[in-house]
Structures are given as structure tokens and as C-alpha cells.
Amino acid sequence: MIESLFPNVDWESMWEATLETLYMTTISTLFTFIIGLALGILLFLTAPKQLWANKVVNWLTGAFVNIFRSIPFIILIILLIPLTLLLMGTIRGPNAALPALIIGSAPFYARMVLIALKEIDKGVIEAARSMGATTGTIIWKVLLPESKPALISGITVTAIALVGYTAMAGIIGAGGLGTLAFLDGFQRSREDVTLMATILILIIVFIIQYIGDLVTIKADKR
Amino acid sequence: MIELKKVTKKFDTGKAILTAVDEVDLSIADGEVFGIIGYSGAGKSTLIRLLNGLEKPTSGTVEINGQMITAIKGGELRKARQKVSMIFQHFNLLWSRTVKENIEFPLEIAGVAKSQRGKRVQELIELVGLTGRENAYPSELSGGQKQRVGIARALANDPEVLLCDEATSALDPETTDAILDLLVDINKRLGLTIVLITHEMHVIRKICHRVAVMEGGRVVELGDVLNVFQSPQAEITKRFVAQVTDNGDSQETIKNLRELYPTGELVKLVFLGEQTEKPLLTKLIRSHSIDVNIVQGNISHTQRGAYGTLILQLKGSPAEIEEALAFLRAEDIQAEVMQND
Image (cartoon, chains in turn green, red):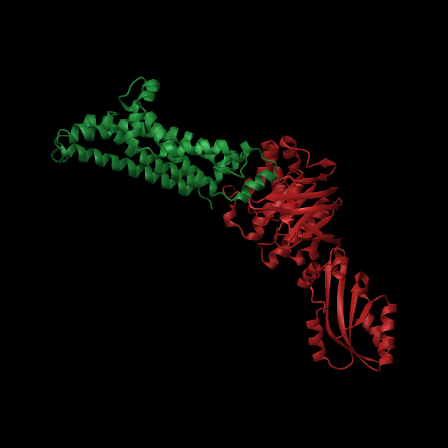
């Protein structure tokens, strides 16, 4: 039945492409989470009247975030080719896509982290200060736990965007379902391959969304 | 215990310089419950934050228990803050933590070993009357219960001073009284010095020993609660006192009473402390041949004793009334004839 609906699909390469997409999404989400979190916290703490209020650092971080958030991903990949070559030693395959994926989405997530942190009641931070908490304690025990639901739903949205980016990275030969759909499906006019790749990408997205929603609800005690 | 000398705090709002606290001198004794009352914008929130270094004064010094709060910073200031804790109008609990974990937070900050934290938390939960709610999240608690968690959290590191920032302003009257009773209890049991700011005279009357009235960043009146209630000096203090007692001073009241009781004389008596417990009226009626009619009266209880006012209608000949007044004054009661002008 499935064989007749998708006559041109090579299931082995389809499975391999799925794993590549999952690999790129997982690794880039992980790094995006760490870098975005750090940038977001820096943006928050260096803003006026905050604990590390510093105009210069705040401006520089803000500029970095805004610039890399604004460059269209497909252009960013091309612009980052020299950096990718330097870091990864190649510009082909799933690993080659990682620098562009991370640099493209970390600033995006940093903005979401900033919004999440701004939602925290200022009084709670003041209360922690009044107890004699250090800034480190405030970050780990107040800022992060108190914004947890927003941080999780933010990374869910980012991870889903990253699935889309990995498909786009397929155009330059990063591998994964995007490459398969483009080279094998589009260029060789095998619509069933494109359709199958799309179905798999949708399944990945739905699973990410489902897990993200579940964890967000569990983390929210408000 | 707490000494403020010429403390001034100015804020640069960009357009203008705002003086929130203006050359305030205060001296608060060990174990005292000291109230600061003022309308919003009077500078009381800024003043209370100067006591734990959350705000730095533009000039002047703050000293607590021999330590210059205004001269220390970094680790030393953080250490000092563990002994000057604070509770807030909106409780400021961490919603991501349970009651137990919220109370544990200051102990974590102070570096208390995990094995000892549990026992201390249990003691505090019992002290503030939250037994059974240990594992609830703040969202499952009422306002009064949240403030109890706030108080337990503030007491965790055995502070010497408790700062209360409008601690009851978000609570209904009944809960307010329960929280105030708890604060009095803590003050007596632990000998803790309490400094509170509020805009409700009721709070001052119920638990404070002394009160400072703030207006425009300055302390305009300072004194024992009983004295301030009995004879407020500043115009703003009179308004605050009128919040809790209509002592019949306003022209409006006098005019109304005169219309209701057109005959005889209206006399206002002010009692203080023990005088409220004497059977004065009985004596007055037995020894004088005048008619006495009670028009209005009230007694307020403060931490420093009771005070009350009583308005009487005295009917009789002018000479008899004069005699009655002399009798009251001989008993050390403030008695004045209410004039309608």
C-alpha cells in the first residue's frame, strides 16, 4: 500500500535523512539554548536600573542580537561559509550547517529570554537582594526558576524554527530531509519523495510541540 | 539600635532632581515597634530601603547595631542584610517554590547546611501558624497565608530588625489584624525591633510604640503613639488621626451636634491611659445636681495604653455646669466646652 503510494521513496535514505535532521535540530537547539540564555541574561542584567546596569555592554549585546536576528537565514549560511570552514573543516554535511543554525537562532532565542525575564515580578528580585543574595544566586535561584515556563515554551518555538532552518540548509547540501526533498524530490520530479519528507518534518514538529507544551505546563506552578 | 543622621536621598528623574528623603534624623530603640506613616510619595518607601542598603543615601549615615550600613558594600552588606530582613506589601514569594522551599531560600543564601535547614523551616512554619501547608505553592494560598510565609522567610536567619513595607496594605481588615497580632507576638517573643511603613493609622494604633509622620520627604511629627493620637500637632497628623477616631474636633461635627442637642452645654472630655478605667461619670452624677447625657464617645487601644474621648451634654444652671467642669479637671481630665463659631 505505502509502496504503491510512494513508489520512488528509498526508505533507507529517507531514514538516514530523518536522523540527520534530528541530529542537526538537537545539537543546534542545545547550543542555541545555552548561548541564547547567556545573551538574554546579559541583556537583562545590563539594562538600565538592573544589577549590572551598563550602557556599553547592553548596547553591544543588543546590536549583536539584532543584527544576527535580522539577516535572512539563507544569506547567513552563505556569509558564514568562511567561519564554517574554519570551525568544521568542511562546508558540506550536517555538521557544516551547525554554526549557521546556532548563530542564526541564538539571538532569536535571546530576545525571548529577555521577554521572559522582564515578566518576572521586580519585587521578587528585590526580596532576594534584601536577603543578601549574590547576583549568581539571583540568576540561578530566582531568574531562571521564575521564568522557567516562558523559557521552555520559547525554546520549543525556537526548536521548531530550527527544523525549518535545517531544511533550508539542505539547499547548500547540509543533508537531512531538506536536501532529500530538494535534490531527490524537486530536481528529479519525484513528488512522492518531497511529500514523504514533508510528512516526516511535520511529525518531528508535532512531537517537539507536544513535548514542549507538556513540560511547560508541568513547570508552571502559578 | 538604629540611628539615621541627616539622611537625604535624591533621585535624578532625567528632567528634575527629586528629593525623596530630606535630612531625616531618627533614632529607633532596641525592641521597639516603630511606625512611619505618610501618603504615597512621602518618601517612606525610600526611607525603609535605606535601612537595608537597597537604596544608598545621597548624604547622611545609617547605623544599625553599631554597623554603618551606608559605609559597607559587597559581601559585608549582604551579610548585614541577613540581620535586617524585610517583608513586602505584595509578599514577593517565589511562585516556583513551595511554602517550605520559600522559607528555605534565605537559609540557602546564608549557607546553612541542608541537614539543619529542614528543622529550622519546621520551627518557622509552626511559629507563623502554617502547619500542614508546607508543600503548597504560593498560588494555592490566601493573602494572609502568603504574608505568613513572607514573615517566616524574613525570620529564618534570626534577624535583629524586621522591616515591614506596607505589609498589610494588600489584605482585608480581618486578615490585617491577624497579621498585626502575629507581628506583636514576634516582637514580644523574639525581642525583634520592627520598623514599619504604612498609610493606615489603624496599623500604627494597633501595634506601634512610636510613630514618625512623613510628608514631602521630611519627618514632620515624631512621638509616642499615645501622645500623637491624643494631641496631634501637624495638620497632616490630624488628618491621619481622624482616619481612626472622629474625636469631634471638626467644625462640621460641632455644628451637627449643636443642632441635635440645642440645650445645655456640650463638653468634650479626653481620657488617657488608666483614666479610661475610672467610674468618673458615676461620681459626677452623684456629686452634682445636673443632667448628663452621653452624645458620643469612643476608646482606642494602643500598645502604649488606651485613650478615649467622650462628648457629654450637660444640663443645669451655668453655675452648676461650671462646678461640674471644675470637678472633672480636678480629676485630671481634659474637659472643654465645645464652642460653635
